[in-house]
Length: 354
Length: 265
Ligand SMILES: Nc1ncnc2c1ncn2[C@@H]1O[C@H](COP(=O)(O)OP(=O)(O)O)[C@@H](O)[C@H]1O
Ligand SMILES: [Mg+2]
Image (cartoon, rainbow over all chains, first blue to last red; front, side, top):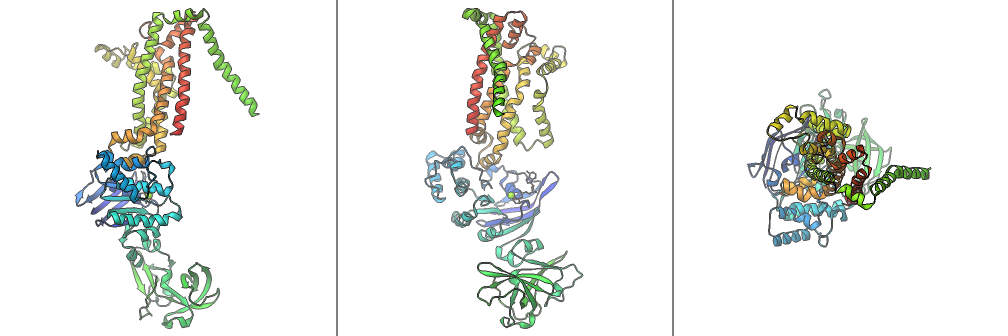
């Protein structure tokens, strides 16, 4: 289903929870709504489902305005954060609910439910009640129940939040594959960036009721449009006076411009490791943390503490050692705008691994 | 220390409940079984028990229906503002705070023959006070919080999400209520029903004021006992009281049973 949302607004009393939200979703895409708690993600999802009224704005499915349509007629599957399974019904009856409501013949209900039970790997659990299932199994039931009436749009509110970290990973992959196989347009909410990056075709960053940015995970990572997105996605160090770093001298201090530098923008090592030694400057290793597959290095440059990673393949550094540091680029922003600036001394572009 | 408290509890229990109960029993049968039977087959006794039964049935039906509706509105409705909800919520508790006699008096003042509303009903030939409708209203006033206060916490605990899930699956209000909400609240409702029956069976003050206690017309079992005591007809008083006590014990057992079911589901 093609979805179009325009200037969506929602107040709870005096609190403006959703502010002028607009977006479009292509048919068959899987979209992640990512952002901190309280940002308005659940509210947006609930308005799409018709569970929450909206103050102003338009929601269109297939170009048709659905603002006034009740949830029963929107053709949406909703997976709630805590699953909201019917606790006095068996797994079978839970999944069959949406079909029975539509007065579908008994035999057809049965075959559809069994198909979904098979698809979600719940075979043998049909007669159990929700309280007799594990968190992961409950999630699968909620998923099967939402899919049973063949909705056009699937909405998932933090589908993995209540699940152990261990099986969460497994379920993510499973969900991703399943949604792909069913081919249904889906939106899922999460506050975990790894989850969003891993599962979604496209991510929308939601903060304080606004869409900060929408794009593929790679685009958002590479080119954050707002300071919030830059700090929220990936790791970074915030620097107040970037002009004190070599290669960035021309950035004016007085304009209130600040900089974000990601670990992978920074290279650290001995002088002979650099092709462009002239662009490097001196730094002192302050801390080293072993991170399993690499070293996390804290290095001090011109009074600024920068964080970067260093491969285990390279010569091991030690604390207090003098090294050379190259800052490839920085993400700069002030009140008016934000932009990415490459190190001025670096004419030859060096491919960087992220 | 704990032991003494338990003993004390038993003593209070025996003094306040068991001894009076035995006393009622012995009083009722002080002239043998026939004395008890004669007291009960007096026309006014049969009539009073029937009136009580009728009040109980009507009040329980109305209170169940409106109590459940009120609980749902107070917990679930979006269209009621929080202020109105808060106001209604405290109104529900009013009968707990107001003495039943005062409640009865309010009904007489509002709907009595001398009042505007009462006069209007009187003119169209519908008597409220000193008649059956007034007694039902008085008993409703007293029992109203019982159902609401039983059902509300259960609705709050289960939350709205199962119902919302049902609506996204295509179920409308009525289907959602019977298939999703009802199974969760059914034992609380039954418990509320038992409480309502017990309370309306034993109601005295409000009914006495509103009914005028007219023999063979508006007299209920409790007001009959009161009148028998006034007339020093001890055996008759005890006999009717014993019937009420026996029903109460039955209700108590039923309450225990529903309470257990309520815990399980
Ligand atoms: N029913 C409600 N009544 C009042 N405030 C609400 C209600 N639902 C959400 N909010 C508020 O709106 C904001 C956004 O909430 P929500 O959409 O749940 O955010 P998220 O899902 O991103 O954590 C929060 O500050 C929350 O407190
Ligand atoms: Mg949320």
